[in-house]
Amino acid sequence: MEKVLKEPAEVVDIQEIDTEDEKFAPVIKAFNTYGIGALPIITLNGKPVCMATIYPSQIVTVLERELRKRTEAK
Image (cartoon, rainbow, N blue to C red; front, side):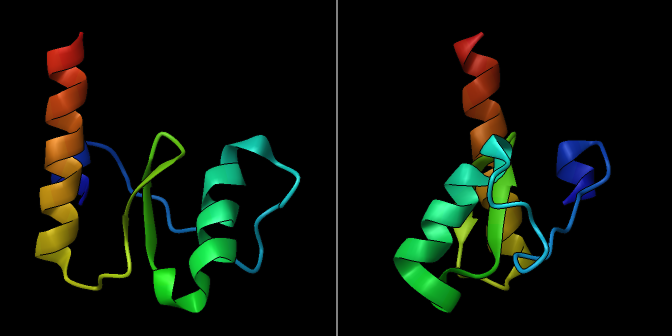
């Protein structure tokens, strides 16, 4: 993932996040909606972009697509 993002990836333990922190609101909502089946939840700038996969290739594909969309939107 770090090769795609070109910066260190951050792993956040869902049990230890501050549920009052607005930056985690989309993650809390996804977890509350889908439960443990949603994990891991991969976010990009606080927006969940990939859930429920442990396959790095799938995660990288989604991140690359999201980054490409953001670049094209600018």
